[in-house]
Image (cartoon, rainbow, N blue to C red; front, side, top):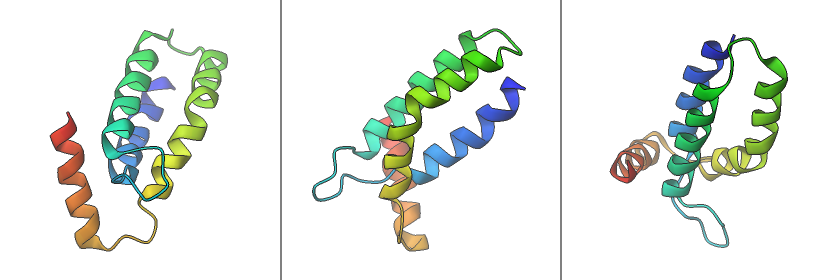
Length: 90
């Protein structure tokens, strides 16, 4: 079950993380760092521990939503630029 969450979450975070917005608290590098931290914690969970997975999701929910909002309304070209910027943070 745990493995099913990793790939979609990684894809969402990579695409959703955007550049630092005016008045925003998160930058694309913050989103990439958060994704890495969450992935590391997911890997350390026991397989099938749904309670721990839910707790982890709750821990990162607010920041994850903020990262998703950073990409709202972006054109395809802007999204490609954001992806390149995210790759530079790794």
